[in-house]
Length: 398
Ligand SMILES: Nc1ncnc2c1ncn2[C@@H]1O[C@H](COP(=O)(O)OP(=O)(O)OP(=O)(O)O)[C@@H](O)[C@H]1O
Ligand SMILES: [Mg+2]
Image 1: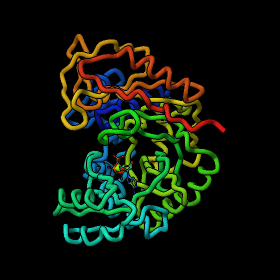
Image 2: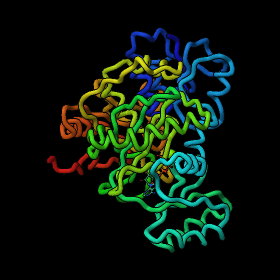
Image 3: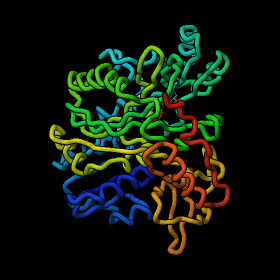
């Protein structure tokens, strides 16, 4: 199978690494790709090479309709069409979808002006979350503990369509699965660490580390999420005429009242993918192609073990990341995914906010965590930021 992978980040590096192990792969191209991805793929720009499958990594091309365009040309695509990608690209659309199909989620109200927003705050007394409707590269959500914070958040975005949501509490779990329009084939769960600093302090980021499977996950919760969330989501897609072929990312909050959907994303999560894909024993490419072809019925995704991914970020990240620093200690034996690097011919150089994701694997979370940090501590660059507590706050085993 000849495959084109669209994207250039840590997620796509992990996808390229995983796909390149498939005996089904005859040739991998990447666009725009990266120096790290070029280890596995031929980088192409301009004319699209003749391929059997296109895998679209990031949300922006999906929201812009790249999948529709390619399908229109008769090409097999992993990634939803523009209308289905609205589950991610419009929070108000996703909320209406969940309400229409009785999928448990935080109570919410969509507002279109500052005045409307301020009036709606009275309906949210236990904390409110203010979300920009459209794609915001992880910067569109403000969790507000007080009314003053909420008013400030609204005032900062006076003219935008915003979703106000009740504040929920509980462990967060990212559930990623391949979807063929009718079925959902789950990957191992994971939990991201969004805050910059140890102890979940500091500003929100694109993700500073991941633990997989999610420690809060168990068989009882899986069964509940299957019947209360996955099945109604699949039925809802069918009822609404959305032929969803791609990765469906369900962001869950396990509240005391039960699991609720925080968000849908229409692509693999980053950095979650860097922790989850190394746990797979099955051929990922085969399953991606089956989802793209609309028939996952014969597929399975076997996985085992635990993973911890530690992100190494640039000085100044997330607000003003500084690039151009020399990276030392990159040992190719380790499982290191490149999110923001370039190679100048002799050396790897930082090139973005999140630079590297270092994944450790083990039979237990503790073992995976120790291996991830052992490897991460060998890698350095000026101003490197790294949390030291990824996967540390594990619940005490029963
Ligand atoms: N109703 C809520 N109650 C409490 N926290 C919330 C709520 N909604 C969102 N959050 C927090 O804010 C984070 C980001 O929210 P959300 O996932 O909707 O935004 P996003 O910008 O689409 O994120 P991503 O970059 O992961 O796609 C969540 O991971 C969660 O930690
Ligand atoms: Mg999102």
